[in-house]
Length: 339
Image 1 (cartoon, rainbow, N blue to C red):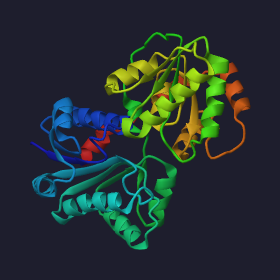
Image 2: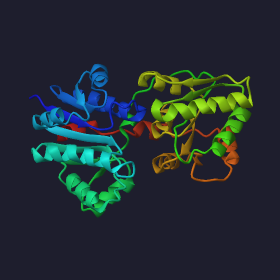
Image 3: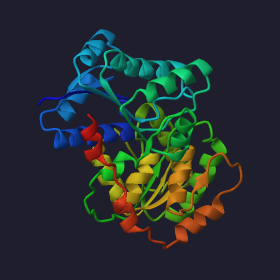
Image 4: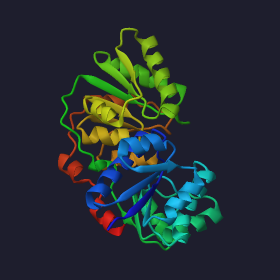
């Protein structure tokens, strides 16, 4: 029996993590639901449809969106941090509207691998709790979110990030060091200058690749960091890696010896590929990942020197637990049974 499935999330914005999650989700729906007809709400529907072999409509084509929801069997909302108002109230209202529309038409709704909160507005908090409570299946990616919805009287399942399911080929390391940065308030000139000094000190003998994973947020700071390195040492071999497909980015990251990274999914891919990773924590999810594997990490909220941390990281020969890494996966079979 054909199942019509709608997927709502932060898709079509060329964000590496979200697009990788979407790709894995679509692949597994097709694997476990043979006759599924999938429609993704995307800000770039032509690209999404072409790359994933799905139907796609524009995120803000409300008439088409409601029509798709009316005729679907199930709406999947996620993954990512969709249900929060720290970024903006407008985005929270939009994602709640999509979920509410499906529930209004009595469609099954699934909360997929999300991080919930913070929701600071009292009215929106009640609305968020009410919408999540009506979902058929709720999977959350961190214990903080699970505890939050528990306070709202909702049971949820703690899940691993879906990107752990990705298969990475065994790629030979190529004597390269990766730097992955994104614009953020904690990323100060002082920090970037110190980071440039340490990268030059420890990695001047290697090719240095600076990764932009979402150009509208990452590219400016990545190009600025390249200029800092070149000004410090004109002999450095430095490249900014941008506009790559997700597959090429995964391949490039997997070929590194070392990776110094801010974004959660950049760190995750590095860990999965056996790269030596130093997370730069701008968000609790990055810190949590580092602590899960007892890794050195730099807290960007701290104003102190991190040269000692960097030196320990450089000299470390610690190997992460490969069995633990390989055991981390998202249970798509159970998810698809709920559709």
